[in-house]
Image: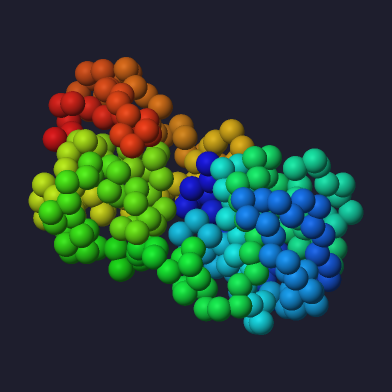
Length: 270
Ligand SMILES: [Zn+2]
């Protein structure tokens, strides 16, 4: 599944090709994604210049001045830049055409979306409840400490809640909790101030490292420039259940929390 680093990598891959360019055509081959592509999308965006491209959580926002395209990659979506005359494949559901180049959306499982929104993006129902961006100064140890008080939820599930902080997907939750030495099953409310400092630091670290390396390598993911990410080779615990801990060499334990695979070291994480 594309996570925050993959979406950020996609943004950085596509933005230089399309920001400042004018939409010369819109091709919708399959409007039935997770939600139908907004009726009237093509009319609203046609002929408009793309003013800016940005990301909020795992959503991409394309600002056309008169409204925004809100794009989510769902479970298996990808956006890439293609030459306009490149024939589409079966899963290429829409193109935003910018002269000789097109921004092409491919999504075999069709859990993504393309919506046209005219309100302020931060007020849209999909974005209004989102917590802070993990890589900004709004996500601090003070913030996390305050939010964890009296919370009995497992800390791993807690940090994966997009209302608390956006973009900490399963892989990044596993990795950052290992680096911070915190057991994923521990109640969020038991974190100390020091734990919160470590965890915030390590969440930022794993996300930033993944972005620097072009997103995590997953089966379906390619960045906006068509190159796969390379992060997976460096994972410390995710996908390593039963293998030796890098620190103490004891076998890593694998459990499920909120139905998500969770791997940790019973000795190094407390
Ligand atoms: Zn260990």
